[in-house]
Image (cartoon, rainbow, N blue to C red):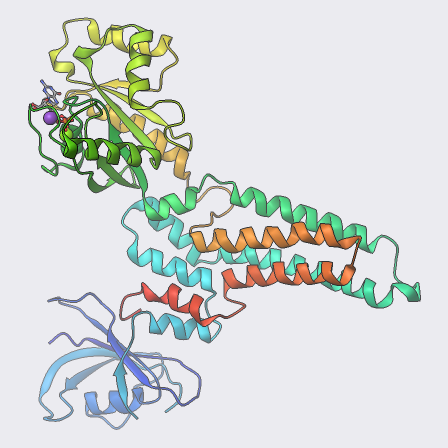
Length: 452
Ligand SMILES: Nc1nc2c(ncn2[C@@H]2O[C@H](COP(=O)(O)OP(=O)(O)OP(=O)(O)O)[C@@H](O)[C@H]2O)c(=O)[nH]1
Ligand SMILES: [K+]
Ligand SMILES: [Mg+2]
């Protein structure tokens, strides 16, 4: 019997279902939280405790919990009563408690999304970013922009209505223009963040690439500490892309091992190589792996070996790269140092020596990779809050489009210009949930778990 706390949430009057859910984790556990919300909560509490009198509002009370049909005692537990109003209980849908909080105006949409991300956060940096969003900073930023737009719109409309009366002070429109311009710069700056918030939310795609037998699959297995990919001395072992999710220094990473890059007659291996190249195009960070014994310690040779992995224009977006010189255990004395020296001279990407066989060098690889991840995702608590979802990016881009058209229209037709300001504000409203649209809500609440 896991009934310990029966909690009644405040909700305003209205003919609504009463919903209930196990809000704590599922499975066997010592303590569980059961939550109900809705008009029949009081009746449920009475029948479960077998007492006509409800506990004092908002105070914790110890009660025997009975099976309402047989009156058999199930357990003893703490109950808290949050009075609201007054049949029929039904299990809550995923995210329904949060949806009610949103509909009652207690949470904005970006806060709701932050809460959802907090539930799903798997690393420390993700947790920080989600908490910050849940606490409202992102929503406040968009709200402030929305208020600026409201002000600008009010001034333009006043100008349209009253400019002929001549009692409108000079320069109203030029002040609106300046405000719109400042806003455009802010929104543009916010969008040009290298997708750090979205990357942190979804995971950074790190792709392991290099010639056959360099030790790419060995590296994947070493980093994820399990034999995720087949390792063998046969060149061309890996064909499919093998993915593994990792936490590196608090940052979420999706690590992919790929087929060794080489010309081949084998149709299946050729498909593997083409998948590897396709994955490289979309990489956020590339781990270029070479067998240290196969390259001469000269900048030219190293650069050429690297170009075979990353020809100009790959990845499409300039993604950072770490050069991994593997099989360092097979190097003769002094050659490792010479290789690293040559990398420095040749202005090559940051490089490290590694032995997947002994594990030596893995710390320096993780530290180089950690630096790249930090640059890519940033400190989620520093600076202004990041947008975290493609949804935000979409509406902000539309908002920017409307602001641009405002400038186009303002000397031609102020009424059309004003309409663009209104549209720009509407796009912001879609992010914060001020403009309610059922389909947006469905998407946001879809990923919640039951009990939240
Ligand atoms: N001595 C030594 N051998 C290694 C090291 N890393 C990998 N190997 C060996 O090199 C061979 C190839 O390793 P894999 O990890 O399969 O190489 P790969 O790059 O994934 O190869 P393909 O998938 O065929 O492209 C295997 O026999 C490994 O045991 C290392 O650091 N030192
Ligand atoms: K191999
Ligand atoms: Mg492999």
